[in-house]
Amino acid sequence: MVLLLRTISELRSYLKPYRQANQGTIGLVPTMGALHQGHLSLIAKAIAENRLVVVSIFVNPLQFAPQEDLANYPRQLEEDVQLCESMGVDLVFAPTPEEMDSRGDTGALNNKTTVVPPQSMTQVLCGKYRPAHFTGVASIVTQLFNIIQPDKAYFGQKDAQQLAIIRRLAQDLNIPVAIVPCPIIREASGLALSSRNQYLTELEKQQAAKIYHSLQQAKLAFIQGEINATALINLVKQKLAATEEVRIQYIELVDPFSLQSITQIKQTGLLAIAVYVGSTRLIDNIVLQKRQPIIAIDGPAGAGKSTVTRSLAHQLGLLYLDTGAMYRAVTWLVQSSGIAINDHQRSPIYFKI
Image: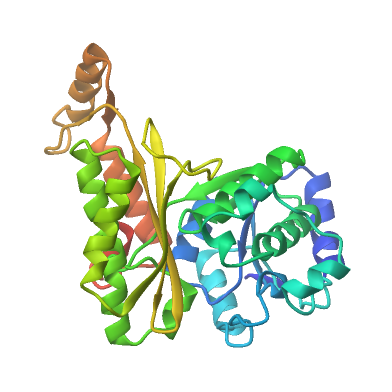
């Protein structure tokens, strides 16, 4: 049974003897609640890799500007706790803003000790339009790291700018936590899962799916040899131009680690986008990476696929994919997430890349 804790002292009291007994690694999944399948994929990975898993549920006021949707942000603690219990989470930490000393909004950052990430990472992409947002994020995430002291912390690739900043934060402050990136989980339409999708009407969801389609257009061009930033960005713009309801805030190609703008993809590029669909702001991205081909052979079980694939890849100096292991991993992910194998409505979200 999952344990719900609301105060820092309760959480520390619970974790102290666990650490002293050296019972195993602690995994942290920081969330703002309104859990969806994207969050559950992070939780499933954390459970697979750690002895004890903590899910934090905290709608952080310090990352919302006064005009943003703090008051309307979806809150469903009871349902979230039930989901965590069904997944096998050990602890849910759901403090109040008073407990975290974070009342107000981004304006309150002036009255609190904060963690300020490098301006080179916070004044680009979303940071251009959300001043102080990432200071609010970094400050609360650092508090959670200090309170829980996890061995690993899990963040989704959808929030790529946040992921890069948290990586840098842990590195620069010598926080002994491994930051584990997790892939974007999508609806069957390609729309990236987000708690803010609740704001969308069914028609708006259909329109928002064009975001992913536009990124896929750029990915196809990249696979065919296009590496120029302007060309890739223009492809996304052209794809979205036919959907008037999707209003572009930015489309940029940056280095996925430094977040600095790049003009060409030499090895890896992050193509990031922010749009408004109706009044709802959505973000998405895709990583474009040059790599050698990967060898994979499919066929009946016991036919020697893995042996042949491994031998061929070794001779050619290439990577290989063990398809049998892949099928087992996918089956485990679906089952551990509580999804029936024959549930065709929910299963596809795991396989949309």
